[in-house]
Image (cartoon, rainbow, N blue to C red; front, top):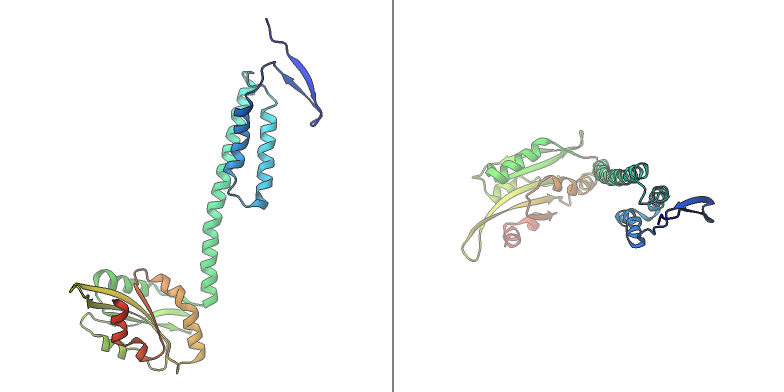
Length: 247
Protein backbone atom coordinates (compact mmCIF):
# COMPACT_ATOMS: atom_id res chain seq x y z
CA UNK A 1 0.00 0.00 0.00
CA UNK A 2 1.49 3.30 -1.02
CA UNK A 3 2.16 5.86 1.67
CA UNK A 4 -0.05 8.90 1.40
CA UNK A 5 1.59 12.29 1.20
CA UNK A 6 -0.07 15.09 3.08
CA UNK A 7 0.25 18.85 3.25
CA UNK A 8 -0.16 20.80 6.49
CA UNK A 9 0.18 24.42 7.53
CA UNK A 10 2.79 25.47 10.05
CA UNK A 11 1.09 28.29 12.00
CA UNK A 12 4.35 29.61 13.46
CA UNK A 13 6.21 30.02 10.14
CA UNK A 14 3.16 30.72 7.98
CA UNK A 15 4.37 28.32 5.27
CA UNK A 16 3.41 24.93 3.84
CA UNK A 17 5.39 21.86 4.91
CA UNK A 18 5.38 18.57 2.98
CA UNK A 19 5.52 15.29 4.89
CA UNK A 20 5.83 11.72 3.66
CA UNK A 21 4.02 9.80 6.38
CA UNK A 22 7.25 8.63 8.00
CA UNK A 23 8.18 10.31 11.30
CA UNK A 24 11.66 11.71 11.81
CA UNK A 25 13.76 10.14 14.59
CA UNK A 26 13.25 12.93 17.12
CA UNK A 27 16.14 11.99 19.39
CA UNK A 28 18.68 11.87 16.58
CA UNK A 29 17.43 15.12 15.18
CA UNK A 30 17.60 16.81 18.60
CA UNK A 31 21.21 15.71 18.98
CA UNK A 32 22.09 17.19 15.58
CA UNK A 33 20.36 20.45 16.51
CA UNK A 34 22.22 20.67 19.81
CA UNK A 35 25.67 19.86 18.40
CA UNK A 36 26.50 23.36 17.03
CA UNK A 37 25.34 24.94 20.30
CA UNK A 38 27.57 22.63 22.35
CA UNK A 39 30.60 23.26 20.16
CA UNK A 40 30.10 27.02 20.38
CA UNK A 41 29.58 27.07 24.16
CA UNK A 42 33.14 28.44 24.59
CA UNK A 43 32.25 31.72 22.87
CA UNK A 44 31.48 34.84 24.96
CA UNK A 45 27.81 35.16 25.83
CA UNK A 46 27.23 38.35 23.84
CA UNK A 47 28.78 36.92 20.68
CA UNK A 48 26.96 33.57 20.97
CA UNK A 49 23.51 34.79 19.86
CA UNK A 50 24.39 35.60 16.20
CA UNK A 51 26.10 32.21 15.82
CA UNK A 52 23.05 30.36 17.15
CA UNK A 53 20.72 32.26 14.83
CA UNK A 54 22.94 31.31 11.90
CA UNK A 55 22.88 27.61 12.76
CA UNK A 56 19.14 27.71 13.40
CA UNK A 57 18.66 29.22 9.94
CA UNK A 58 20.60 26.36 8.35
CA UNK A 59 18.71 23.72 10.33
CA UNK A 60 15.35 25.29 9.44
CA UNK A 61 16.12 25.09 5.73
CA UNK A 62 17.62 21.61 5.71
CA UNK A 63 14.86 20.02 7.82
CA UNK A 64 12.15 21.35 5.51
CA UNK A 65 13.15 18.40 3.28
CA UNK A 66 12.22 14.86 4.37
CA UNK A 67 15.07 12.49 5.21
CA UNK A 68 13.76 9.87 2.82
CA UNK A 69 13.96 12.15 -0.21
CA UNK A 70 16.90 11.36 -2.45
CA UNK A 71 18.79 13.51 -4.90
CA UNK A 72 18.53 17.28 -4.37
CA UNK A 73 17.54 17.23 -0.70
CA UNK A 74 20.43 14.88 0.15
CA UNK A 75 22.86 17.24 -1.59
CA UNK A 76 21.41 20.20 0.28
CA UNK A 77 21.67 18.32 3.58
CA UNK A 78 25.36 17.59 2.95
CA UNK A 79 26.00 21.14 1.78
CA UNK A 80 24.52 22.68 4.91
CA UNK A 81 26.47 20.37 7.20
CA UNK A 82 29.68 21.26 5.38
CA UNK A 83 28.78 24.95 5.69
CA UNK A 84 28.30 24.53 9.44
CA UNK A 85 31.68 22.82 9.78
CA UNK A 86 33.45 25.51 7.77
CA UNK A 87 31.76 28.25 9.78
CA UNK A 88 32.78 26.65 13.07
CA UNK A 89 36.35 26.20 11.81
CA UNK A 90 36.43 29.86 10.87
CA UNK A 91 35.29 30.81 14.39
CA UNK A 92 38.02 28.70 15.97
CA UNK A 93 40.67 30.14 13.67
CA UNK A 94 39.48 33.66 14.41
CA UNK A 95 39.67 33.11 18.18
CA UNK A 96 43.16 31.60 17.95
CA UNK A 97 44.39 34.52 15.81
CA UNK A 98 42.73 37.05 18.09
CA UNK A 99 44.45 35.51 21.14
CA UNK A 100 47.89 35.78 19.50
CA UNK A 101 47.26 39.38 18.45
CA UNK A 102 46.08 40.19 21.97
CA UNK A 103 49.30 38.82 23.48
CA UNK A 104 51.40 40.81 21.01
CA UNK A 105 49.49 43.97 21.86
CA UNK A 106 50.01 43.38 25.57
CA UNK A 107 53.73 42.93 24.97
CA UNK A 108 53.90 46.11 22.91
CA UNK A 109 51.94 48.01 25.55
CA UNK A 110 54.37 46.80 28.22
CA UNK A 111 57.29 48.02 26.11
CA UNK A 112 55.58 51.35 25.53
CA UNK A 113 54.80 51.72 29.23
CA UNK A 114 58.40 51.16 30.24
CA UNK A 115 59.81 52.91 27.17
CA UNK A 116 62.54 50.27 27.05
CA UNK A 117 63.93 47.90 24.45
CA UNK A 118 66.44 45.08 24.91
CA UNK A 119 69.54 44.84 22.75
CA UNK A 120 70.07 41.42 21.15
CA UNK A 121 73.57 41.26 22.64
CA UNK A 122 72.04 41.05 26.14
CA UNK A 123 70.22 37.81 25.35
CA UNK A 124 73.19 36.42 23.41
CA UNK A 125 75.66 36.97 26.26
CA UNK A 126 73.23 35.54 28.79
CA UNK A 127 72.84 32.37 26.72
CA UNK A 128 76.62 32.03 26.63
CA UNK A 129 76.74 32.37 30.41
CA UNK A 130 73.98 29.81 30.91
CA UNK A 131 74.99 27.19 28.34
CA UNK A 132 78.75 27.58 27.93
CA UNK A 133 79.61 29.32 31.21
CA UNK A 134 81.88 31.74 29.39
CA UNK A 135 81.25 34.44 32.02
CA UNK A 136 80.91 34.60 35.78
CA UNK A 137 78.65 37.64 35.68
CA UNK A 138 77.11 40.20 33.33
CA UNK A 139 76.21 43.77 34.24
CA UNK A 140 73.49 45.53 32.24
CA UNK A 141 72.55 49.19 32.09
CA UNK A 142 69.76 51.20 30.52
CA UNK A 143 71.05 53.68 27.96
CA UNK A 144 68.54 56.44 28.65
CA UNK A 145 69.25 58.37 25.45
CA UNK A 146 68.11 55.48 23.27
CA UNK A 147 65.90 53.80 25.91
CA UNK A 148 67.57 50.42 25.54
CA UNK A 149 69.16 47.85 27.85
CA UNK A 150 72.75 47.12 26.84
CA UNK A 151 75.65 45.08 28.19
CA UNK A 152 78.00 47.20 30.31
CA UNK A 153 80.49 44.64 31.61
CA UNK A 154 81.34 40.96 31.23
CA UNK A 155 83.06 39.13 34.08
CA UNK A 156 85.35 36.24 33.17
CA UNK A 157 84.97 32.74 34.67
CA UNK A 158 87.94 33.32 36.98
CA UNK A 159 86.47 36.43 38.62
CA UNK A 160 84.94 36.26 42.10
CA UNK A 161 81.87 37.64 43.80
CA UNK A 162 83.96 40.50 45.20
CA UNK A 163 84.85 41.48 41.65
CA UNK A 164 81.17 41.44 40.82
CA UNK A 165 80.22 43.59 43.81
CA UNK A 166 82.91 46.12 42.87
CA UNK A 167 81.37 46.39 39.39
CA UNK A 168 78.11 47.81 40.75
CA UNK A 169 78.23 51.66 40.81
CA UNK A 170 77.48 53.30 44.14
CA UNK A 171 75.09 55.97 42.79
CA UNK A 172 73.54 54.37 39.71
CA UNK A 173 71.02 51.59 39.08
CA UNK A 174 71.95 48.41 37.24
CA UNK A 175 70.72 44.94 36.34
CA UNK A 176 73.07 41.98 36.67
CA UNK A 177 73.23 38.18 36.48
CA UNK A 178 75.70 36.12 38.48
CA UNK A 179 76.52 32.42 38.07
CA UNK A 180 77.02 31.27 41.66
CA UNK A 181 78.76 27.95 42.43
CA UNK A 182 78.15 26.37 45.83
CA UNK A 183 78.30 23.10 47.73
CA UNK A 184 75.20 21.65 49.35
CA UNK A 185 75.00 20.01 52.78
CA UNK A 186 75.20 16.65 51.00
CA UNK A 187 78.57 17.73 49.52
CA UNK A 188 77.18 18.13 45.99
CA UNK A 189 78.52 20.77 43.63
CA UNK A 190 75.76 22.93 42.16
CA UNK A 191 75.29 26.35 40.59
CA UNK A 192 72.43 28.82 40.30
CA UNK A 193 71.99 31.90 38.16
CA UNK A 194 70.99 35.00 40.11
CA UNK A 195 69.23 38.02 38.65
CA UNK A 196 70.04 41.11 40.73
CA UNK A 197 68.26 44.43 40.44
CA UNK A 198 70.57 47.06 41.93
CA UNK A 199 68.84 50.31 42.88
CA UNK A 200 70.80 52.26 45.53
CA UNK A 201 69.06 54.91 47.58
CA UNK A 202 71.54 57.53 46.38
CA UNK A 203 70.63 57.10 42.70
CA UNK A 204 68.39 59.55 40.83
CA UNK A 205 64.64 59.20 41.31
CA UNK A 206 64.06 59.13 37.55
CA UNK A 207 66.60 56.33 37.17
CA UNK A 208 65.03 54.26 39.95
CA UNK A 209 61.59 54.63 38.39
CA UNK A 210 62.88 53.65 34.96
CA UNK A 211 64.67 50.55 36.21
CA UNK A 212 61.70 49.52 38.36
CA UNK A 213 59.19 49.81 35.49
CA UNK A 214 61.47 47.93 33.07
CA UNK A 215 62.61 45.13 35.36
CA UNK A 216 59.85 42.59 34.75
CA UNK A 217 60.01 43.07 31.00
CA UNK A 218 63.77 42.59 30.93
CA UNK A 219 63.66 39.71 33.39
CA UNK A 220 61.38 37.73 31.05
CA UNK A 221 64.02 37.99 28.31
CA UNK A 222 66.50 36.05 30.47
CA UNK A 223 65.08 32.56 30.36
CA UNK A 224 66.99 30.43 32.85
CA UNK A 225 67.32 32.72 35.87
CA UNK A 226 66.71 30.72 39.05
CA UNK A 227 66.87 33.29 41.85
CA UNK A 228 65.87 36.96 41.81
CA UNK A 229 67.26 39.49 44.26
CA UNK A 230 66.45 43.17 44.86
CA UNK A 231 69.12 45.28 46.54
CA UNK A 232 69.32 48.94 47.54
CA UNK A 233 72.44 48.59 49.70
CA UNK A 234 75.59 46.42 49.45
CA UNK A 235 74.58 44.60 52.63
CA UNK A 236 71.42 43.35 50.89
CA UNK A 237 73.46 41.49 48.29
CA UNK A 238 76.33 40.22 50.43
CA UNK A 239 77.87 36.81 49.82
CA UNK A 240 76.12 35.37 52.89
CA UNK A 241 72.72 36.40 51.52
CA UNK A 242 73.58 34.89 48.12
CA UNK A 243 74.55 31.62 49.80
CA UNK A 244 71.38 31.59 51.87
CA UNK A 245 69.16 32.16 48.84
CA UNK A 246 71.01 29.49 46.85
CA UNK A 247 70.46 26.85 49.51
